[in-house]
Amino acid sequence: MSSEERSLNFIEEIIEADLAEEKHKSITTRFPPEPNGYLHIGHAKSIVLNFGLAQKYGGSTNLRFDDTNPVTEDTEYVESIKNDVRWLGFEWANEFYASDYFDQLYQMALQLIDLGLAYVDDSTSEEIAAQKGTPTTPGQRNQFADRSPAENRQLFEDMKAGKYPDGSKVVRAKIDMASPNMLLRDPIIYRIKHAHHHRTGDQWCVYPMYDFAHGQSDSIEKITHSICTLEFVPHRPLYNWCIEQLKTFPSQQYEFARLNMTYTVMSKRKLLQLVNEQMVNGWDDPRMSTISGMRRRGYPAAAIREFCDRIGVAKRDNLIDVGLLEFCVREQLNKTALRRMVVFDPLKVIITNYDQTSEDLTSENNPEDPNGGLRTVPFSKEIWIEKDDFMEQPSKKYFRLAPGQMVRLKSAYIIKCESLVKDAEGNITEVHCTYIPESRSGADTSGIHVKGTLHWVSAAHAIHAEVRLYDRLFQVEDVANAEGDFKDHINPASLTVLSNVYAEPALANDSPEQAFQFLRKGYFVQDPDSTPTKMVFNRTVTLKDTWAKEVKKG
Image (cartoon, rainbow, N blue to C red):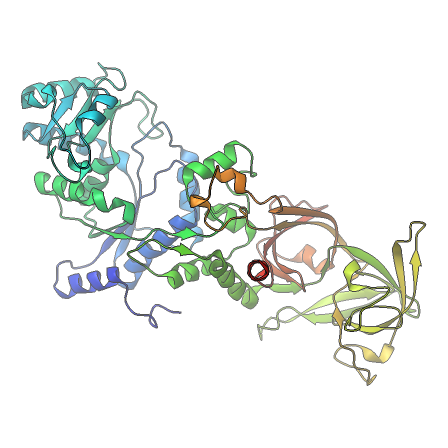
């Protein structure tokens, strides 16, 4: 559904009202990830929303890295985030970092101290937590709240100078210890961290807390619409309080429901755990919910954008069916994927009456694309078919290959099974067939009609390949609320590797980025592990939703 066809979401309604009232000449949004991990599909929703709104209303979007915690952040994550945003199809107006504003943020904290609206507290984290009270009982300020602005300023300057160890002092905003919103009970806005920062090195040993840095960074950049997820609703009063007290640009925060998806985890902490404990093969493992994992698996960026548009922007959390994402992927790939024939579990077929060495046939690249063109497919006396496309004793409605039965080979000829060969254990090793020379696809004059059509690969021309069949990483729908450790619910069949696979030779000349539909098998993409001597393909998604069938069976 295009943006023109659907009704406005609540954020679009706010923006249109703001523009109509000339509250803003143009809008500015931002995407502010912390560079402490790789982005996942939940971030994709935020990216599509923020950049999409700016595009729709002629505004701009800043990419701002929230790098206020030097312990967990790394330039590797910065570069991966930039790659992901660009891959999704967006370009930012400005690239900023919260660390760009460390001097300004420090001065803003001093300003609050001078106004008597912030103080240095020597209490431990446990003491501060206890002094905050409970949701039903007010908190109590300690003696450090009575320090004079001059004393607080000196202490904060000494903190900045590195005179105190980690955890020995914090700066707290002086707001309301009886507020029903616990986040307004003198929240911490600065803490001491003697840690090397990925951009500022060892210049700083005091760092702003997210709630302080976030709002002030928005104001510095003159962000008009600061869009967050619902967990930030209780943080908005502090966001507004800081802007009011510091008299900075009046950015406004708006909240929408974060993306929760079935069979998926959306926690950077849990994703990092999967990587560190080697439950997966890195951040870009195709089973991961990371954007880089989905890219490696072959999900098109256009399908992810379409998925984000379809789920819309809501004010309440809900659980989105991953099947909708897979539907968007199939819908996109059906239009763009090149059709190729690949045999996963090979059985040799010898066409006994075929006298040529080989011949070149043609087959369409994509029947959905009128400009898709044709490719050459070599045909020879010996071909590979799937083992399960042959049955020695077929059932009544079995229309594939069987003794005395005819089938059509896709884009080739009709063949008839005449005999078979077995090894000492009784396994079928070869099937001997005859072909009908007049039955060539596109020039069939045989008058023979068959119900079954098989894909195949010429044995003499086949490429040997490895295929990785990826499936959902978790077995339960709502992983976040499932009992026990989330790793207990990992799907043991989330990856199956097939190493004895034969593919048609056209794949050797196709672009590594090209998406494919392996006929009757699913959608696939070449993996970076491919080498000139061995191609590796990842299954992006099956042709149909096999999980929906399993749910119905259950």
